[in-house]
Length: 517
Image (cartoon, rainbow, N blue to C red; front, side, top):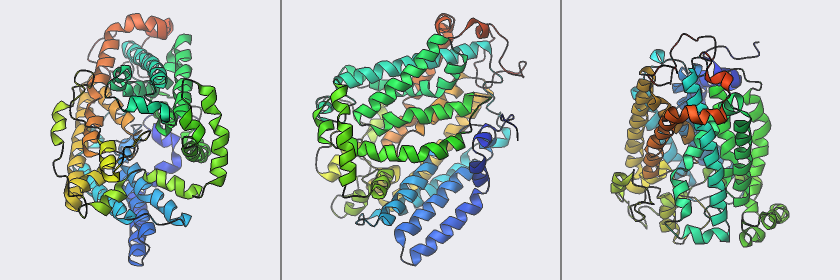
């Protein structure tokens, strides 16, 4: 077997077993769904619907099996992950733990299954034909100018992520302890400027492998510093997302940009997933200790003392680690929504839908504009109390049910399937036209997979479109500033070289319609 991936097979080289599962996904998925439905009729609703959702998630990846032959990421990866983890493995772990049953969890699973079946069906009809799509030979066909733009963009985004992490830590805006309550009660502060461009920093971690391989010593230092600072402060803040997201984004960039990788990510995943799962559970204990709540990130040594208390809390916990992990994989208040709507709380209908008109108006320009990231507000309404230090909310299917019932789940997710399919068409149209617009679209989809299952209808639209102009602005700005910025972050041997790789006479796949300088 070749030690390095041949052309058009980056994903398959990194995930040989996973690729075989995806290629047989229609068979495996249908088998799991059939077994799951039989278990439902036999009375095991949670386990049966869990298996059915895992099978549906595998079928979702199978729909894009041809794309994964030549591209590093499927646009439906996040939706498949929601099926597999939120609707499948999470409830299965809860059921197998032997702990008390979660009310209406089976309704949550049914909503996930019906909604995503509609989503995958319509997405499969609307998405472009993969036979006409150019491979993601971004590095092999990269012009020197595009290389400069990407390295400069990644370096600046990583610097932004360092500054953002430090500012949010010092002000308490990212703190899940008592220190963060002051910032959480304010709509505006110095952290608002950084939050508005928060996922630009995520773009930096996607580009980090390219920056580290092609950049100067300074670029390498920035890359390592960003990873250490963001993940370290993320752990201290008690945020699972901030602590683990950079690793996932770097993995995406490793598949996308490193043409001669040294490690298969499938092997790394087998080793790291159990460790990360344990860390996921431990972080939950850590941020619920008295030592964590009473300290702040401005005094990290005090905060770190809570680690001992977290170990003791984990040993004395009345809830098993299996149940806690399952609960966190579900990670929403959807069961409360299904339990109380419409019995106690009427369907919301078109509530706050006009907030879409304020999509591109940042809070620091008008702090009182309608909120699109409304998951926490919905959770507070249903739970009847203020929530501090948490980002819990509803899922897409939970929010569609909250608005319009099960019919809304099916119709709403079908419409979203059409929308994501059209989004993908726009991406590949940009690829054919050689525009930076296409790369900006792809970067949005790549960061989208880092979102957990807490995503309402409005916040889903916000995630897909709010970051698009910012990513495009970053790339466009670095295109014009790249000669200046590149002198700091990319070596001279690459800035004036011929296009990287063995196909130097080809045009850059995701590059601009410009000539190399």
